[in-house]
Amino acid sequence: MPENHGTKPRILTGDTPTSRLHLGHYVGSIENRLRLQDQYDCYFLLANMHAFTTKAESPEEIRTSTIEIVKDWLACGIDPDKATIALQTEIPAIAELTWFFAMLLPFNRVLRNPTLKTEIDAKGLGDTYSFGFPMYAVGQCADILAFLPELIPVGEDQVAHIEMCREVARRFNQVFCAVDPQTEDDDYPARGGLFPIPKALVGRIGRLVGTDGNNKMSKSLGNAIFLSDSPKEVKKKIGAMYPGQSRNPDEPGNVEINPVFQYADVFLTDRALLEDLKDRYRRGDNLGDGHVKAHVIEAINALLEPIRARRAMYEGPGGDDLVIDIIRAGTARANDLTERTLHEAKRAMRLDFGPRSLRWAPR
Ligand code: TRP
Image 1 (cartoon, rainbow, N blue to C red):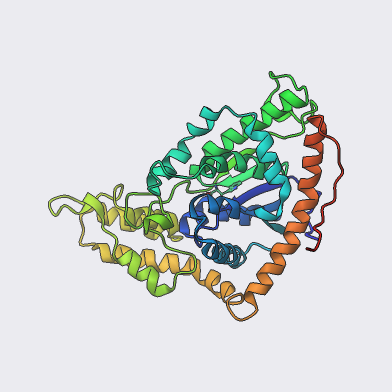
Image 2: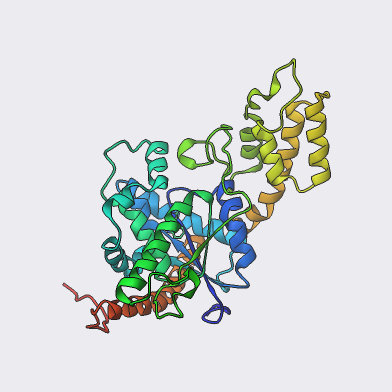
């Protein structure tokens, strides 16, 4: 049983196992999770159902990514003795709450969600995406609220989803728990609401640019540096970056628009060195892009080195089994909590015909 369990305010967040984790995940959310895992009762959800909304034909790939993401979390320092790692598809309360919440949201409200729109463009989903794709945004409200959390550490792109989640929580409390609509967000539980109105916590860098220098870092755009990349891969990816319009030979360098400097800003721990590089670059001193890149490569590798070392412990034979044990134990704990939330939600909805205990019969 994790030492924080039940006594501290809760955190819930998750990742969709469509790819391994990259540096954008790290600075957008993982850093916050590491910082907060001592003070909060943390739940980290493997949102594997969401992976099926765009990749239903690749179940094997989703399974592999699910296990790889847990390895990434553990490698970063997420400690399963402090935080609970749980698998969405084995938490039935989430699926049930998704249905109830779908009834509290206008259809067009869901489709207007800007994060869904951005994703449709970025992943080239066109107009043939599954019905389940926009549905995941409703599901994410259930992912969160099933755990009654206070805080949700996420990257900037998730804030629209969290806003919808907050709307659903208010609506449920008003409709089924008779809470006055004028109530302040923080007061809902005290006024008899089941759900708290949780807050997004955006990381130090809400949106990290990819190695293409234009788009948000993401696997589907091929511009990501993964936490599991080797030193060689990091060197190659940074080495191939284009410095943007900042190298007009007649003008001094422009650090603002050079994506290599954006990385320098994020990853160089030696701030004096960073300022010195910027000054020299701006002045047009004889400071080549290769020189700046070398510092960035070194800084990223310094960050990734301990992560690689810890990851290696799970990469040998038996590593996957260890991960699956951690998922099973965490999911059991998550079900203790979320079944109770579901039961209370049903009671508020006059659906309290339980309790239930489910088994399946042999054929
Ligand atoms: N949609 C999130 C992402 O793409 C992942 C996610 C699923 C999530 N469920 C969640 C994040 C609940 C926070 C809370 O990054």
